[in-house]
Amino acid sequence: MGKSRVTPLKQVTIPRLELTAATVAVRTNKMILKELEIPVQRSNFWTDSMTVLRYIKNTTSRFHTFVANRLAVIHEGSNIFDWRYISTKLNPADPASRGVSAEGLLRMDQWIVPPDFLLKSTNEWPDSLNYDSDIVCTSDPEIKKVHVSVSTIVSSQPNQDNWFDLLNKLIDHHSSWYSLKRSVGWILKVQFEKLNLDKEKVDSKICLSVTDMNEAERAVLIAIQLQVFSSEISAISDGSDHVKRDSYLRNLDPILDDSLLRVGGRLHESNMPMESKHPVILPKNHHLSDLILRHIHLELKHSGRNHMLSRLREKYWIVNAPTAIRKLISKCVVCRKQGSRIEQKMANLPEDRLLPNEPLFTRVGVDYFGPFEVKIKRSHVKRYGVIFTCLASRAVHLEVAASLDTNSYINALRRFIARRGQVVKIRSDNGTNFVGAEKELKRSISDWNVEQIHDVMLQRNIDWQFNPPAGSHHGGVWERLIRSVRKVMNSVIKEQILDDESLHTLMCEIESILNSRRITRNTDSHRDLEPLTPNHLLLMKQKPNLPPGVFCKTDNYCRRRWRQIQYMVNLFWQRWIHAYLPLLQERQK
Image (tube, rainbow, N blue to C red; front, side):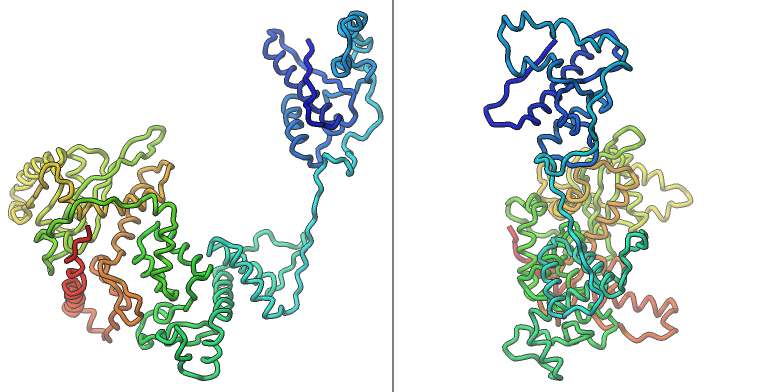
């Protein structure tokens, strides 16, 4: 059989047309092998174009897209050693390309009678003309030009202005704070440690250390501060205790520490880490500030702006940071997808949310969320999340339930009570699973009332209160937290499937993130106390807000330690009453 294609109207070079004909031959051969029921051991391909043969048998040069795509088809459907050269006079495909009349075609016997050498053994077939198949002329227009870049590293000390210009270009070029530090880290490692870059002597195990990353971060911060805060740095370097009156850094009382401009503040005598007492000052509306904020935003799994501001102040102080955080979140695609909807007017708060001085999780709200698909061996099963939230402190506890039946929920509740303590009152939706759970819970409590634990279980009666039917807005206290959980999980899980262990680990990490969120407002003043979080009471870590007291060795005794913890708890509830409850007064919608 024969097959030909019409030359396109657009002018195409002869080598490209010959290469297209070779591609048609390969595809025709593939079709014939598929249709024939006779096994074929080998197919031979003949072409009268030496240029095409060089293209096919070349493995070193890189070609332009047109030639490269067709060579890929040829290499996939044939072997380069099956391609041979045939002269134009003996090529039966030549008349199809040049054109011939019907009378002339009848007088031609090339379509019926093959060339004489094909009737002989392959050893007697004519050899290809003398040519080097691996060499294609470098002036061939189908070969891509190779551009070689040579970089020279000078070991002499760089000029300071040139170094700062380089850092500014790197900052503008990068879109990630981590990748920027890596790039600057490698430059510093090569420049100042004078690494040997000879190919024969390079150690493949050379990598950046934590010290290199810290030095790179410090170099970037110094360069930006010298560029933006040059007048303030000059004033402090000259021995002045204050910057100029018209400087917008004057209220921060900046100090110069190890060539870095930091917030002065009033916490110099505290036992806080240096980075928290005196965070590094960064300018507003700068690309570097945006990189750091974006890094923190992703690190906190797209948390809110107050949580971001709290994490930012642990190390950096960006001027007018709340506005910058608000702009960043408004541009975040993931956060915009999780936008909230307008709902009905908020109701008055129940009494359970306004009772201080009770242990955490004494009065809780509970709900299910999910499902989440996990992989167990070769099968996929569903898992559900169970959220318990303290109605007073807004602390969160997450559990994983294997199903929606009563036994699974009872087990989750028992794990929660075993880890968080006895519950006095539970609020939940009026779901069928919770109605069943109430009956099973009462039955199980009656079963617990045996001789050994009769007195103990009488003290563990749980008051279960259900929301009205079709009144989901009564559960806003946990529905809002479920939205926060989903926001973190949707930004992390996306479309991948986890196993049981990974899902449990992720739930614990999300629980830690939610319990570190603030429940009081965070202001832009460095003199204000750190905002309250549920972790302040869960973990007994008050961090840097109040200066730690001076304790002696006798404080390790039980009575002393109990009084110390009790004092910290009292401080939490005092601030809860004066700082948190007023925030609940306004109706947000």
